[in-house]
Amino acid sequence: MNVRFTIDRLGAHGDGIARTESGDVFIPFTLPGETVTAALARDRAALMAVLEPSPLRVVPPCRHFTECGGCALQHLETDAYRAWKRERVIQALRGIDCAVGPIIACEPHTRRRATLAVRRTEAGMLLGFNRHLSSEIIPIEECPILLPEIVGAFDRLRAVASSICTTTKPFHLTVTATISGLDVAAQDSGLLDDRQRRDAADFAIREGLARLSVDGEVVVETKKPVVMFGNVAVSPPPGAFLQAAHQAEQAMAGLVGEHLAKAKRIADLFSGCGSFALRLASKSEVHAVEGDAAALAALDRGFRFASGLKRVTTEKRDLFRRPLTFKELAAFDGLVFDPPRAGAEDQAKQIARSDVPYVAAVSCNPVTLSRDLRILLDGGYRLKSVTPIDQFLWSPHVEAVALLEKPRKRR
Image 1: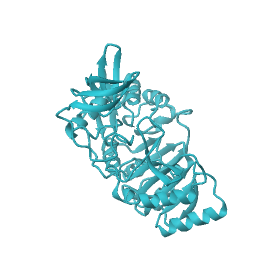
Image 2: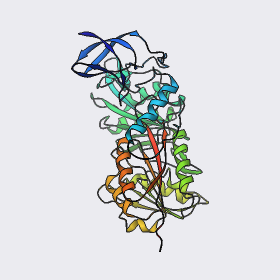
Image 3: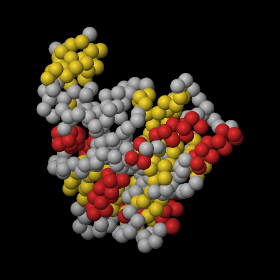
Image 4: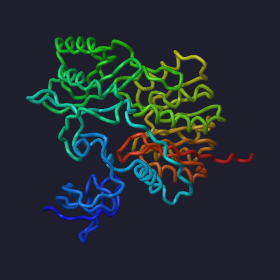
């Protein structure tokens, strides 16, 4: 049933929200102040037509927008979009006494890593992103977020997917643009026999891929995939976590590095492949702690083949189950932690009990960041600044870097 709505505000996921007598209705791809018609289904509605558009509505830069579920806000004018993103952090930190700084923007065509959905069909390989709130794969021919070298490889990626696909079910390709070329990691594409493995390897070599892996196992590596963390070259393991945009990573590393500049010994918790640790090691000794052994090994190799760095040590440890204790943290005068979206509640409790004078908290989830910051503040830390970073362009997700200090105890 089509119903007329007036949009009141934007929700946390970028949906327009209309107030009704029976409660809020969420309508994607609408803006505050607009009058629209939409097909109602419980508390959600599918947009049918915009009757009275907002003056902030702009033409989306991508023809797949509203079908592809990757973006939520391409239709919102740039300054208003960035203000909304920054406001997400402000609202999450409500009640915490600290001004949120201006948002650091990332430009289009800068994302170096994408996870594409793939499925074999009678018409060929379907490659794209899932429709909004659906498992349906929307095939894509363009993407204004991704680096041009990834978009330009869509046809090759379909062919790669075809060469390794032995399942009728959907699977994923994680594609990372590296200095050496594209690093392609398939997940759940099915088991390969020897012939299929040879054919896939031959195809990857002909197409100039740096590496092709399936479920973590390398099928072929023509060149070590290399990313730069400052001046240090690192070859990440297949499908490894990396910051989505190099531009955002540099901004975060700059904020963290400046804050920890006085520290002589730094703990990097949830260190991944070393995007912070290896930059910080140019001035300070660093102890990197991470639960993923392959990521730690990549970090360690990067350190050992680099020059001009202070000592870097590594420790494989599940920080969710066994956080570094406040007694262990006594060895450090600087700390950075960058946990997954769930945050680092137990680790934050240990940091709060510690005397580490300089702490940087990096997060892709303002809600769990707020929780962790409150723990640190209750433990005597002072929040110096919070900087939002728009690493996930036109999505509701936002990165933030919070910098804290604890006054040294008088002895």
